[in-house]
Length: 217
Image (tube, rainbow, N blue to C red; front, side, top):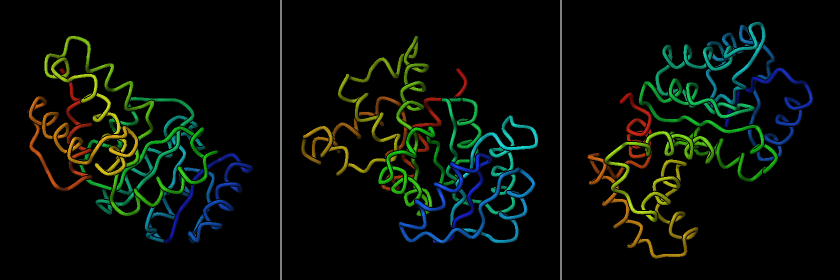
């Protein structure tokens, strides 16, 4: 699997390269700035891009914006964004086009090698990998004064959080120690209460939930 990596801190960039190579990823480019990232994505056409939000020269959201422009030129380009803090605006921008293959992780997750590698693979395959803290903030933001969200039971909110992270029904059932049939029932109830169409496509299902949670009131 071919990866373009963008991270301006040398030690972290080098560590990520070594980590991904240890799991049989091919790092076709490891860059440190926005212009370098733009060129690499255009010329190398990787299977997935792993991108720090803040890159030179602006050190604002240069990495994210470069990735979003690349997705315009190549719709569906899988992008996993890394950020030091939860920034809901960045999550919204990343999910705005509704296409698959997106992820938003805090850099702390990088220190869990298996979790991080799983997120890269999931995004590269067209799935979604959203950091639990991002999901919790979006859920909390929507819960206040939101009638549909208020209809969810505590268990349904737990399932929704895990669903929005990109977890399958099997994985959710294992974590909550219940049957897959129970999760399927909770999932159906969630979509009914939120007024969302039930879909067999896991990624479209997650993106629909996230779009609902973060849409303007």
